[in-house]
Image 1 (cartoon, rainbow, N blue to C red):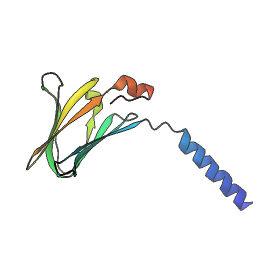
Image 2 (spheres, rainbow, N blue to C red; image 1 turned 90 degrees about the vertical axis):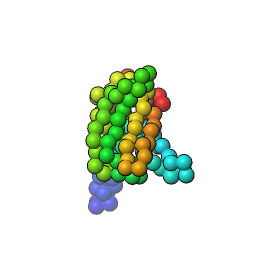
Image 3 (spheres, rainbow, N blue to C red; image 1 turned 180 degrees about the vertical axis):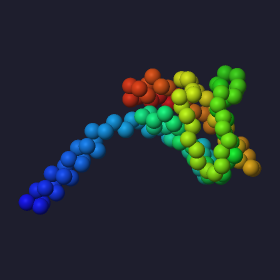
Image 4 (tube, one colour; image 1 turned 60 degrees about the vertical axis):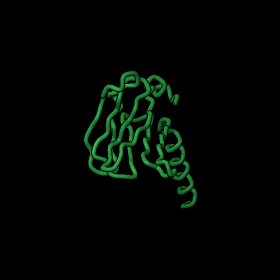
Length: 123
């Protein structure tokens, strides 16, 4: 009887886990010239934030417009991680700059909210 109850419980937990829509995850990785990871940006289509992590502590980041490199969004930071609010960005490809004490790390990121809502992400 215990085995049957445990089996049913595991089955229900498994079904609940698979039925949740977690969205699509896109990961951007920018490396140093030596091949080591400099920054990683994780974009979960089911979330309103981009998760930014860096190998080095950084004091600010900036998101620049693709056509004229005008500052669209930026923030100060302490440490190696932060969340970036995607709701402040329109669809498009942006330049992300992460400022450490020793250097500036640059990466391109693509925001496509219409495809995120449908479950498809184009990068």
